[in-house]
Image 1 (tube, rainbow, N blue to C red):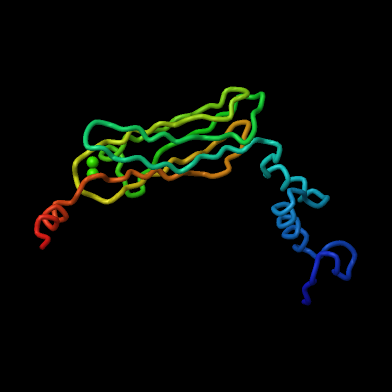
Image 2: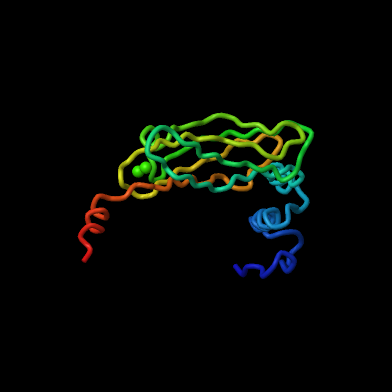
Length: 175
Ligand SMILES: [Ca+2]
Ligand SMILES: [Ca+2]
């Protein structure tokens, strides 16, 4: 069976069986619109509303410190202010940092008050004097209300500030 080279070139009347649905999917993804017909109507309902504001969160880095806890503050931005309250769920996840040892895990729901376009999520970072690599965690976003998520996560980097013992010894032994 010879396949059509485009949606409009199928020689018969109407669409080839099984052909118009993929075209509709691709078209919907690229343009936000979909062809007429039952399939198109169903597919359109799962697309994000382009009128909704977008939530974005930026990567952040903090110096670890040697004792107590420091604060890693993630800044969230809403692309435009809206009249409805906007909320989004968040949770931290280990990458190379370990919850409980390097930072305190957090999860919950953060809100933008009507008219506001910024919000913050704070993670406590635990200081130590161990020489180690920089370590990172993720802040994941999910389940937005009255908005869509522009980026599903941000990376938080904990910058180690402890000299390895070998480096100190090496310094002393230099000619
Ligand atoms: Ca330290
Ligand atoms: Ca350290």
